[in-house]
Image 1: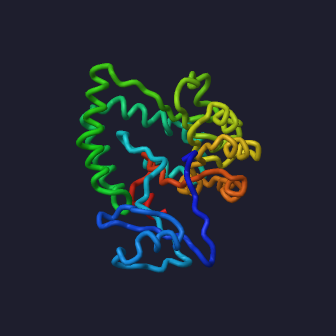
Image 2: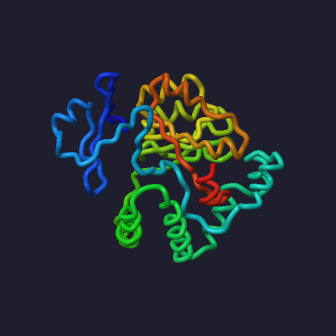
Image 3: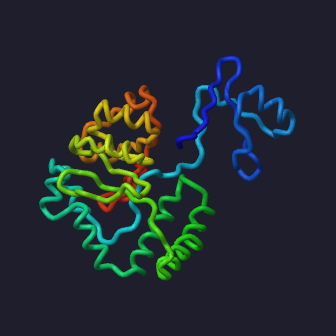
Length: 263
């Protein structure tokens, strides 16, 4: 993402892309460049002026491995309970951790596979899902069993009352940051060269500038802000300051896949 190229078209020479017979991007460039390079080789041309063309969605922030559920928390949220109210009542992340510890590895895998196949609808290619299920996950398990797998990335939940003193400077880091309370964790994440930071409802102006300067990706989670009655993150200001950003579903034990898609 830090080396993401951009193309700036204009009224006389806009942007153009070529899709091959497999449905993959073959070329992206200005209209003049594409027509010169491909010309009559293209079977069909589409004018997308005033529209958006996007590839299959790759979800940048989601939680797919868990057991149990926290559906009752949804009713608590509708009644006005905050995330910390739910946490103090025994719910939240710690509740899910206990359910995971009680579940078998086979149960976790079966649940994960079901959710992954549901998330596939309307999103990335089937081949990617099959590769994860049939090749990557079994290989990861094999490496873990042999003691050969080395972790080089960690996503830290950085919030008041949850995490203190994590030795993360040696890891490639992502953060859940500034969701409920402004702790200036974004500035800390920028100092650690975090690749991405999520939520950001309480981000400061200084935090926005730090993310833009370091090239940290801002992951925006609109379903979380909506369901928890949080103020929306200042996305427009992030864009104006030059932040790279993306949005994601953030599927969790408190939601269903269908509700994520609806929202």
